[in-house]
Amino acid sequence: MILVLISWLVNSFLLSITYLFADILINKHITQPTNWLLFGYLLTTALMVIGISKAGTYLLELYMGCRLPITSEQQKIEPLLLEVIDRVNQTKRTNYTTDQLKIKLVNSQIPDSHALGSDTLLISDGLLRTATDDKIKAVIAHELGHLYNKDSFILSMFIFSSLATRTVIGLHMVVMFCFRWLSIISKKFGKKGPHLMPFIIFVLLMLFLPVIVFSWGANKFFDISLGFMSRQYTYRADMFVKEVGYKDGLVSYLETMHLITNPQSSIWERITAANPPAMKRISKLEKV
Image (cartoon, rainbow, N blue to C red; front, side, top):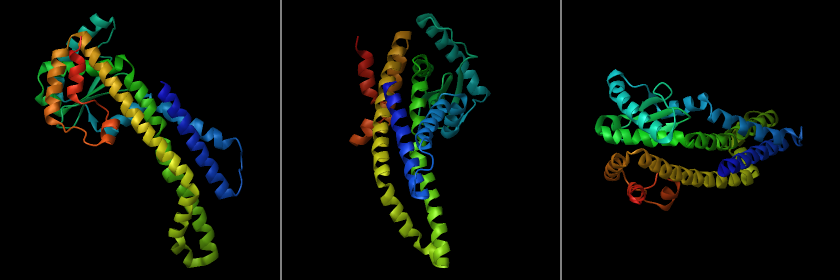
């Protein structure tokens, strides 16, 4: 939660500063002193609320290309999900039901899975069609562990808090300023005005360079932080699987993943990866 708070503070500040820069450059002065500060913090807060709402889950499902299982897939999934839920309820004293949890499929040949929001489990076509029942149950238990620990809830807040910084700084203020300048130059130079657009964009980039550089650095920090959080949550969900009795199935699944996936080659890929290497996960699972 500390990283989520830092993300909220930094992204809000970046948006506020961007608004302030645009206000000064477009209007030659600060028109409403309090608006630039409120803009960033209110927008970032609103995005974080959306991230943990049903709307945020729907947007992520849309982005990932999720679909409902067809009848034959549902018939295969339901008994496996029911067994896992019963085991988790007995071990963790929870009260999950099949009506409470939703399973959706992602069209991918890689046997993969994800947890979204507070009640959605995603599994890939590749997992459902090629994995054994024991592997599927272990994967379902792993994703249920994410829901149990509120991991997907926290990650959604973290991801959505930086959306505005990644888009608004790069697009909205630039477009506003370019149109403003183009309008002024077109009036003064007539048909020659649009030909000066490359020069306008260059000057604009120079004026906004401090904000752009700070934003770039902040987003790289958030990428590293998100990768670190995701890997720690993965280890914790693995321990959840072990505690509820599906360790062997998970180890078998991870051995398969080790054979079919390419390891992260560069340092950047390793420090921003969402999941730790499969063999490292197995090593932690096998420790007493």
